[in-house]
Image 1 (cartoon, one colour):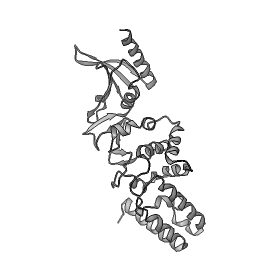
Image 2 (cartoon, rainbow, N blue to C red):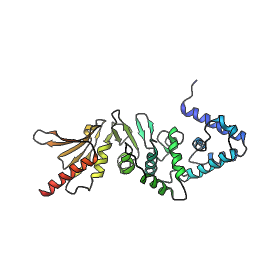
Image 3 (tube, helix red, strand yellow):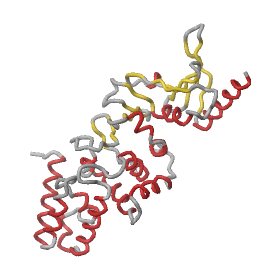
Image 4 (tube, rainbow, N blue to C red):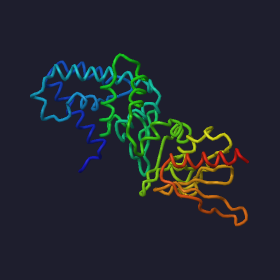
Amino acid sequence: MKLEGFYQSQIQQEINKAMLKALDSNWKPLIEKVEDYPYFLGEISFLLKFSDIADNTIYRVIDHQDRQKSFLQYFEKAKRIFGEKSLKVSSTLLSRALLCIGDYLLKIGRNHTFLRDNFDRDYSWKRYLREENVCYLKEILDALDVSPVDKTLNDIIANFTGDDWRTDFILYPEIIEKYCGENRNIRKLDDGVILLLKTNATNGYCAEYRTYSLHLQSLNKFGDLNIEYIHSVGADYANKYMLINDEYGITYNAVKFVIERYDEVKQEWTLVQEIETVAEVFNWLEKLNKQLVKV
């Protein structure tokens, strides 16, 4: 009978701990101390991995004292992020710092989650600690020094130089906090478009990531433009757009931003222009703003 991944990993973790205790008596009190930490609830495999103890075939040739020191250091650092009952830092701040390192998100069904600060079986940071991409957390812990954790996380964010789908989530925390809210879920579509979910499914309200970010960046930037975001129920991102002065709409078609103007007579949208970059969209908005100022 084949064991499910979770149970198989739990069994392997117990085997690893038992072998360590058998090979060196100093492991027993150390492991029990870490297991008793309320947030981890016995889930310490990630700390063993961070301490280069992941394969039981190497146990007989390792320096146990050195590994024990490393294990304890990672435990003490992890406690600076994970309190006994909840995170000691902002969940969004931790998410953004982890995204700077890699795609840490967990895939749950058809969604990807930024994770929640609770003990939910599927969506919590607790689950993240037993997943493969917990490797990104190691880089966070390695970066921690005597400075406050918040400062270290913000420094990681400030030094981010990437330019891919993660970028706007990292630079604009409001995307996660204001739209995704408590659920903290997104849906990655086959064509590369990302939907921000208000709930856990697309049968609730959703926003399209690129245009929602554009909307946030444009607020209060163009004085004479009334900018709002129109979201909708369902996965059709053509119906999710940034609305300007109740006249122009900007959507994203997985390749370019599409600017359209609403024709009151025909009662339909007509194409104005297709634009590839956010900078070009800003230039277009600036020109529109200047035209209105002249009027």
